[in-house]
Length: 623
Image 1 (cartoon, rainbow, N blue to C red):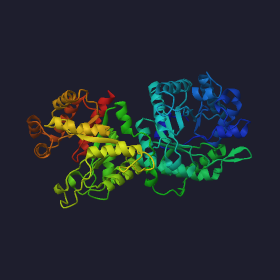
Image 2: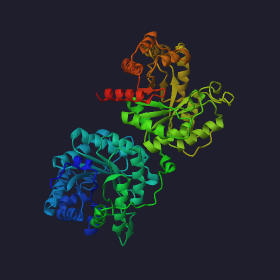
Image 3: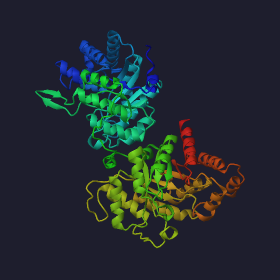
């Protein structure tokens, strides 16, 4: 039988059984300490490494990993092995290849194992991004040149470092298959505070061939994470490689309690959840892999319930205070594409989630969730935003109107938003209740948007409420404000905006403009009035017109929106108005290039048009 290329093997859908732990077995079978530099044994004791590879192949592994998990410049230097990166990685691949040859099983794949650098990367450590990229490049060049079938990134508890490493490999060799595995700890969060859904979404977008989870916990915990990841990115190919339970120290040796028989049961569970590639991590041995092989080879494998319930949304919601994706994009000056989604007048969310999946597939960076737009009764915007983040891994911007909330509720709602992981807010006055479904509803408004921005940025983000009382820990909200750069009274608009900026606004959502020259006039007038350039990031609203009637309504009945007669006539005479509206939106975005930092697409319920605008913007960014 001729071995298929790794990507073609993945496409067959048949489970791929990887090997188990290397360090655990080296520790058990030699005098090496648990914290020894196992990568150096590729040179110091190659026979020990070779024997373990052969044992895993004999146990039935379809793929073995090179003994190079820590063979990077920083981990080797900490073990006194400076300058040997190329040597240990090359020897690691040679030993894996020799094991395959001596086992007479040429169908086994070799994955080059790459782990974290072991040094914090800025802004959370001393290592610059450039130095980190250079370190990964050094190791990856050695592995790729030695002829691995794939590169397996594993045990990354900080998934932003994993994304960095993937980017380095893609630049070096865009054709090499990538297996990317994250690790989760307390409450199923990554070290940076991200839930499985967000990590799965990011890894899938990175282009990795296989994404998944390893280490961190035993099979039950891994199964729970796998379920959340597979729900968030169902089109991805997944892997799962658990530890053999939680380790215990017995007689000076580190032992893992999970038996080979238990792992046999778990093998079919992982496959049923959606994993194509399975194996073991810390504490697993050739015996565990042999038991998994036997389970996979049974004519009919039963599903084994590991007592994991449905996705625990509450558990997935406690996102730690890592920077939000939006705050990172704003700081980096990255062009950001977001689409507004309005909650439905229903408790059913399946349609909304399906539309969000399509937007994500088109490349949207974030989703704005409107709160009772036009004062119409809708599902809570918090619930929708939370479902999008926890189940699909799509970060949101929660619209937070001040209208309809007294100061007690405002602050309580802010705490609730943060607890649910909703840390991007768009603070706005909100629509008056008199225009909506319940005109007699309370329309209380204790605080103006500019003041509420100050409450959030200068109060809660400093750890206190409006009365100066502690809220336990500082919050970490990123806050946006409203801006109409095409306002007739530009001086008044700038005066109000300056209050919002002084209060701490991080960005603005701009009112839709159909005459881009108005943006230039705003910039010029701002500089004339303030003596400084306008630098607040603006995500400009884009409203793809889909009919002549809609264009006339927006122009005549929506305050702040002016549509030139030429555009209205163009829509009126169009054979296919939606396609003409899409073309107009694209032309406007081209004319605004360099003046805005992002697009805030308001689809008016037509998410097909919104997806086309997103795809257009992403194509432009890639060129």
